[in-house]
Image (tube, rainbow, N blue to C red; front, top):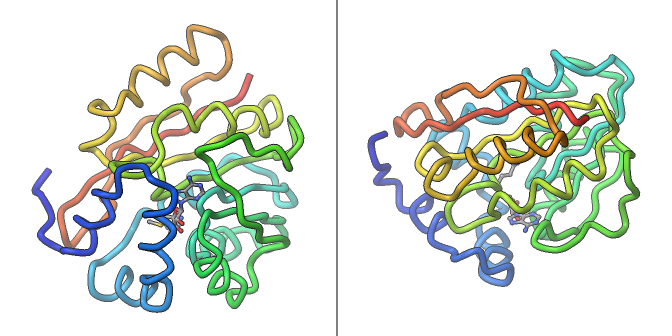
Length: 210
Ligand SMILES: C[S@@+](CC[C@H](N)C(=O)[O-])C[C@H]1O[C@@H](n2cnc3c(N)ncnc32)[C@H](O)[C@@H]1O
């Protein structure tokens, strides 16, 4: 991987997994997030994750977009499967404000994946997607436990982890442990371009909940 010199990405990756710092950072970025990411930086992670999820869910599935931000992933899901119901959660209310304008989500709520998602019952969702929050300075592999709890047995969990974070932060070990413990089956791990113009890659992981 070539280190990006795009300052805002460097800043995003140095937030030290501190919920207040992350919220402040995305509150400031929310207004220009979509144009910065799609036009200036160049983003492909949302499309790849939506595609991987939609290949594995029914046309009327209920899915959760964790760390939905301004709703770019929700829009991509809707383009592929219009009748899927999408709930979104995010730490940053200002990002959710922009997601609301997209009209792709059934519900949008503030929630923190550093903690237990106690307002969401066990085995609720037919699929879970999580893009851009498992990485340096954000949420570590422990966050996967909650995604597994709230997904139905057989449901796919699709998530992206920046290449530089995948082994360094123990995501590879976590996936192996989950499989050994009989909690998930690993369906796919693929290296894909996340920010193509910056030559930043991620591992796109698809797990099936057992
Ligand atoms: C890089 S953005 C990704 C947004 C969206 N998924 C996308 O692909 O454009 C990261 C998002 O994760 C959210 N986030 C970071 N830490 C979080 C946490 N602990 N719980 C919930 N959301 C979190 C941030 O507020 C931000 O909206």
